[in-house]
Image (cartoon, rainbow, N blue to C red; front, top):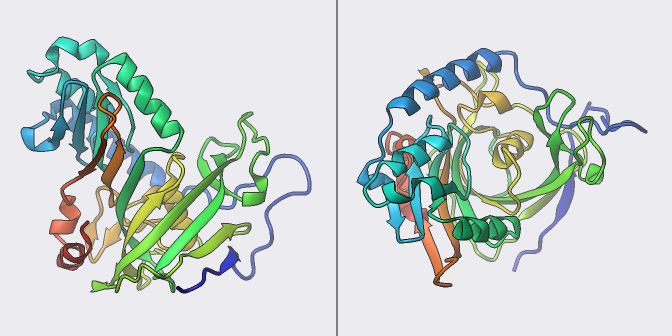
Length: 319
């Protein structure tokens, strides 16, 4: 079995941003200037789209008397799934008891759990808090292809002075931020599935490269006009921090395609990116009522079917 080796991510020429005293400084960069207008446009479009959205039978992956597992499309707000479910025949009588057990960002697609009672909701919230629910995500990234096929990154996470979610040094975990909250730990494991359409060979005996964030990383790898790699990864979040996968992809130098907030390209091969390419692929947990271990897998997102390289690669990497 190959041994795991560890390093602290750093880049030449950057000074350590952590001050000697006071509040900790974020390591990840601020939002790009172009992101403000693009995010406003996407939010406006999503509001209009969510107002007319109707859940179809193919969007319901599983349903029983206690919960529903749905496949959320990109560009739809989570609350829309609740309102759409409440009008269906099986859930209309318990509309007031529908709860979101987990949330996805507006532009992230994939699996969400909706519970039908307060008790079941409480059980699943506790399971998420205790990290007993296992999830995988697919992301198509545009940036520098990593040298290692498996990476585990750990860092701090918190809100900066201006309220943005940022990566912080692992050594800052537990320190107080300007708003009064604390820097919390977050960790994500990544498996590289393909680079520029060429699938990677899977070796279960290879241990992931460990990256402990202490200084600035590679930053934005997707600047306009540069040649960048198309990298398909599967992410295994070990914690559940807001924008965790997006932040860690940015720090590692392969931001998610279309993720303008965190350094992703907004045009790919001459085509505008209307969403970021992140998909909640699978979820596994102990059923809160029956106790059975259940596993659900979402259909591939639209960006996979329109990208032959992604589709061919995923055919080899399905569970």
